[in-house]
Image (cartoon, rainbow, N blue to C red; front, side, top):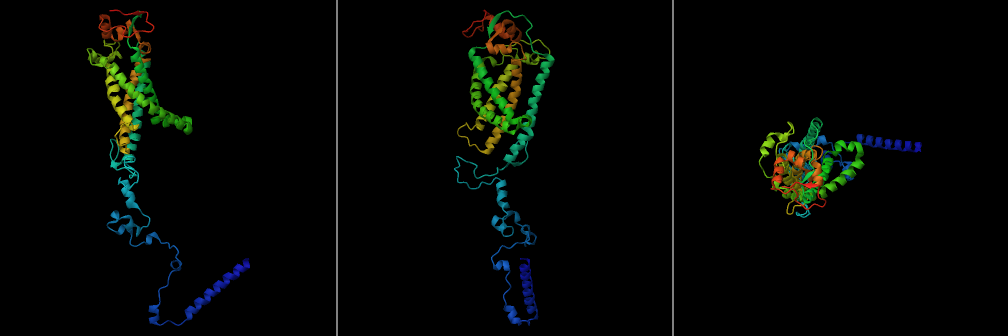
Length: 398
């Protein structure tokens, strides 16, 4: 085999040498004949093969044209085949292309990248990147920090001051503070809020403190379950919030003693709680700021994210703005409700029992809501507002 290949190689080389020698020794052709001779055709072109070319030898260069930035894809392809920079520049600027999908079902089907905007806290960039900057640079770090700060403040207050206790001795005479309907409305709203808060915290911050511990597979299933619960608990929270608002509206209007209660800070620092009505000024701030104002913002933005509002065009920009508003409002609502939850459980003796059973002792009512207690004693408010299933031992009578 080796000998055969060597012989073939030598034969080809000898043939090429003889041919070249004959060409060199041949007499020069006549000038006229040389002028009429056709130009030699490259072997690759004659056979229809693909020719390569050094990109640095392309003349003229694409950027040499003064209208280089305005060239169409067809013009650009003459010197830079495959360079679709004009098309991608239009895509980046948010130019709408063609889509066969109906506008009603896919309003942004022709837009790969959104136009440039500048959301509060972002640079001037396309809307998707602007939303990402607001979420990752502002909402997540500062929202999470605010939530942790409130938790730490409550913990410091609890371990330094302890629970607010009742100083007097229980009399055994009970006042109905919450009717069964009021408690049902409150607990429905509280349970829905807890589901939303826990699931929202995990979805927003879980990858920082849960993912490294439980791993990606379990974290993925957990977030999927919590997201599903979040979507179902949202409408329940909205309905129960409306019921809670109208149920407790009557006793949350400004009344005497509210400004004095605020000036004293509710006596949380100095001790000695100022007199208040059925709900003190702090509870009224929670009602109007958290339940009413933030409740409207959270519920309406949540409905947009769930696509429950009819007649609204659900574009990406709509969802981005709704998410930013929803995230900020929910963080503020959770921070406000943390104080309410604290005082309603371990922060005040007898507060949780009042919402669980509906009744408080006469001593508790006098120390924490003196004006309300005086109205009950005067007969302006009945001590028993509902028909009890198991009547308490004694009811305060006017």
